[in-house]
Amino acid sequence: MKEIVVISGKGGTGKTSVVGSFAVLAENKIMADCDVDAANLYLMLSPEIKEKNDFYSLPKAHIDVNKCTECGLCEEYCRFGAIKNNYIDPVSCEGCAVCSHICPEGAIEMVDTVAGEWYKSSTKYGPLVHARLGIAQENSGKLVAVVREQAKHMAEQNSHELIITDGPPGIGCPVIASLGGASVCLIITEPTLSGLHDMERTLDLADFFDIPAMVCVNKWDINKENTHKIEETCKKREVPFAGTISYDSSVIEAANQGKPIIEMKSNIGEEISRLWQNVYNNL
Image 1 (cartoon, rainbow, N blue to C red):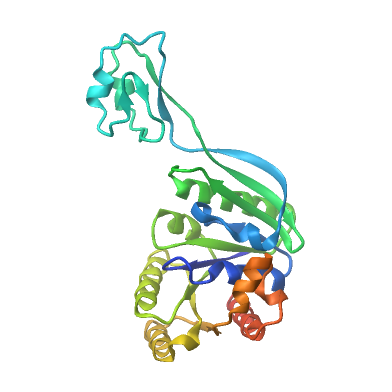
Image 2 (image 1 turned 90 degrees about the horizontal axis):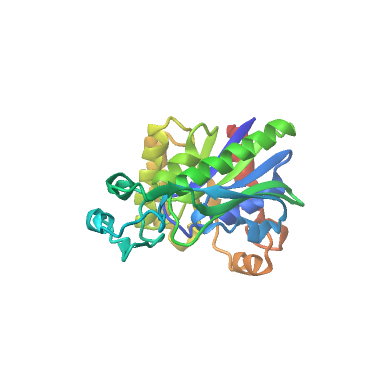
């Protein structure tokens, strides 16, 4: 079983559109949407949810009013201003547990809180594991790990040969959780100076975890000079250059219709097909 993780140094580079097209082109695969902070692959694949599960993040403090003597120590020692008048604001609470240790009456306990949901779904392209993080919730790296774990479990159960993962942008905790143990990562970038900079940071992250990387430039024709710089950077770093995708406004129309761009008439269908073949051959 192999896993392809599609990531980017920043949001909005088009990685979800690429993953949606890969879902059409690949065979015997499972899709996983690990961009849990802004999950939108499901909008393109129109899944039917088969199983829904709660995701529990870090515990939050809770006051038992029957035990509380209103001494005010918890409010005094809370460094996040989460406790006012013996009430704990769950949004402001960071789950540090200081208040539970300082309470002389043992009136404060740490309780698990639902921070989101994860789903197992079916699509006409194959199974999809995806999730949704709750409003103002954190610890998305842990939720990413849950999504990947479930995708691998489903792949093993059903003898799928490939997992295609839509990873989160950036280089933080969710990206690290997405990369670990992957067969290859495909970095989608744009032909801008910031795109080049973010691509190099993402390549550094992949190098650190010893994950083979490939690079694709989306909308390469809006700045051919910067595209050339990105190609030269890949050559210097001995990173395979997977291909380019031209700018095409039909991508927006495909998103509006909730379809992968590869299923619509466009000027970039062949480019995406070649990109997929290059990535698959690299496995």
